[in-house]
Image 1 (cartoon, one colour):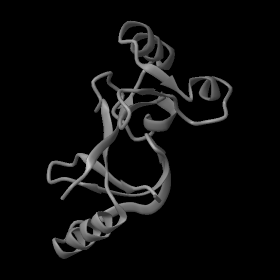
Image 2 (tube, helix red, strand yellow):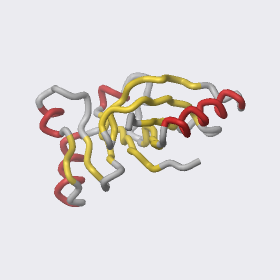
Image 3 (spheres, helix red, strand yellow):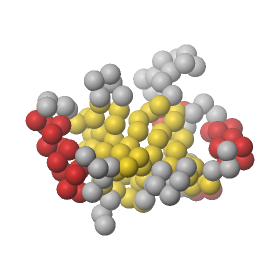
Image 4 (cartoon, helix red, strand yellow):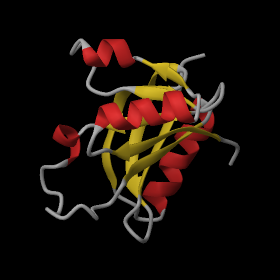
Length: 135
């Protein structure tokens, strides 16, 4: 299967501190930060490279159902992007192997704008998002 890393999602305790660190210390370009601060989008991001972003999910997006301790899972999910044909083939392989799709297909925003995604889990419960973008 040919794919590329699209984005990584981190559950964050202090979104402003994280934005500050990633943009000022790591010097990553902010994505949708002003829109997030204005309440227009649900989460901010930073750009790792031309193909990959890191999303910061604020507490309200992940705290429900999470353990109360600070040591909750920090990685929310990761996303791989591929062409539509590869995506269709993956969905077929998941079904053939009894892997349940937890969500999707659903429209989602990522490193290259809006795409279509499905979410499923690996054998250890890590959430994987597979997406394609309309070319």
